[in-house]
Image (cartoon, rainbow, N blue to C red; front, side, top):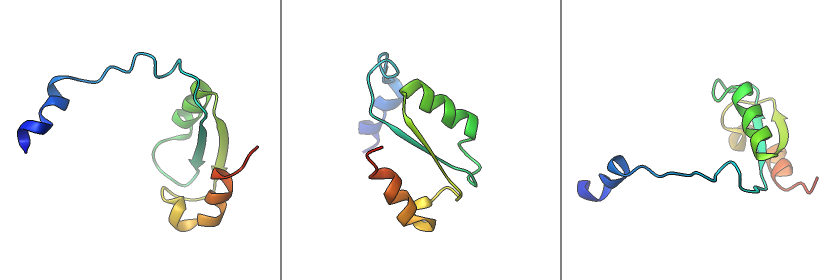
Length: 77
């Protein structure tokens, strides 16, 4: 089993066009989560031209705010 996994360490994936592709993305920043921080999340949203939303919760909004998270993920706006 170990030999199957060694390739990921010896041959890194190069995603040269990741940031330049047209993505349909949504970034939801959870204000009470320690990581990732707001600055990182905002940079990601800007680079992906993503929709930006915030929830006043920790790292697991699917547990603490499932209805609010579902509404954000299914919005057409």
